[in-house]
Image (cartoon, rainbow, N blue to C red; front, side):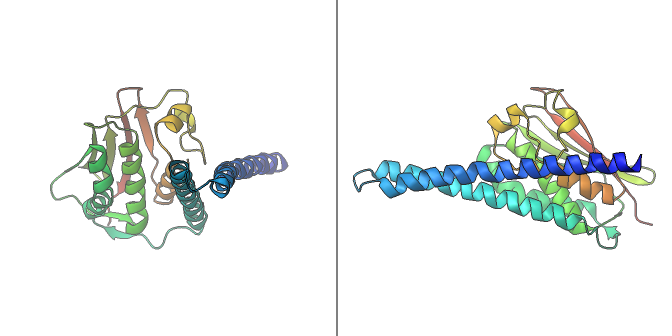
Length: 234
């Protein structure tokens, strides 16, 4: 039974490595192709030269995000630092500030609804900030202009409940079981926005280290809601 479990784990690992190799190879191949175009361009072909230059810059940025997310995921294996009392509202406000410009450029409104006198939670502030940045970024990317992404912080008996709701494109039911899998991106998500497919994996990993489970409810064209609860600090 133990041997069988290790075999499954090894196959999952091999699949992940193949997927990472593919995700790295695709932009590299495209960059090489456009490098050849640049090398063969004449002075008169300035428009073609600029398009290739912009394409390469975009692919390099995509590679950099993928590598950064892979490094973040690997560092999470070390666990979180000591969990201490954290003002969750401040953490969320910092995450909102980080996403404000990209949301404004897209015409998406970010809002925070927090219960009064919210108690502190047990957590790692830096890691929790990453959770909110990833979820808010996800909401902004898949919400059209004129839409909303709302964070709700609600106080319970011994925990603070969190909801992040967007009015975006929603997630197909067939994709929902897989959205937290490393490097998974559904067909509609790929068409709608760029991404590494690791953001939600990082979110789930961090929350698991805080003893929290993340849940998702979504319906195509009716938006998505992510929710979880964090224990109140003693």
